[in-house]
Length: 321
Image (cartoon, rainbow, N blue to C red):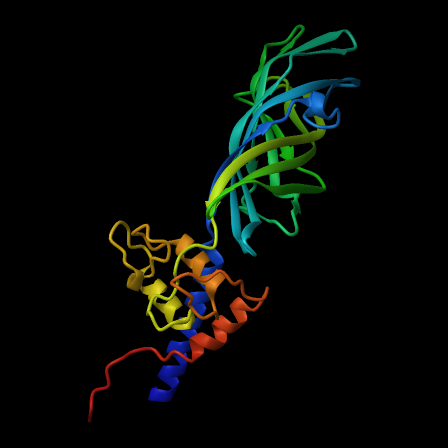
């Protein structure tokens, strides 16, 4: 392999590795979304649950309370942030007791509860202008009992019902406080649910319980981030460019002892995704008094990164012949 070919291969690998880091290292915030009281809006946090055994069916409506847990991915925008990614990681949903009459069969739902998760794949939802695909996520009813006349109790912890969301979900972001560069946001997460499921009424039984669930979950959560603060000029040459990203890449993973030269943009002694976010925010701008607050044009960072990385030759030793 010629030296020129080796250089081209090294540059291509280098460019690909940087793009991979940018794609996988988005800052995340764990947020607890507390479900809003259904009295605030009769259309939210009320779930219709329909049961059917054989030819007999009944439908009841349950209020839903509790929490949804989520990881929010974000990036800088102007003097704040915007949400780019959503992963539901659990939570605790509680339902009101329900009484169904299926012909001559009574079914009592007692102690019903559940949770929400993100399906894998996709593993997370892309959030575009505050909206995401609800079908990326699911609600599971996995707590409580169905007490069925003339049959053993149906334990939902052993045989849960569940299914995915439907349509378009939303996640909004509102600034509710700012002290210096520390910004506090309120986020409203709305997840429409619509699914059907079927389970045998008892192990091995030819009789099945069909369930149909529909409604909308909505919760409110708060979190804080530090915006437009830090210095991504890791090589101290008065600009923020591809060479600074190279410094961050070399230092990525250092915990507790990192310096500016290692890629620590926010002076927390770690080199991580938060420092990369600061680099993205400051990329292509001259440094002013150690901090940069300008934001690159949308969609240009990845493109300039590719071009810039190809201009940074990899370092290697040349052995004279």
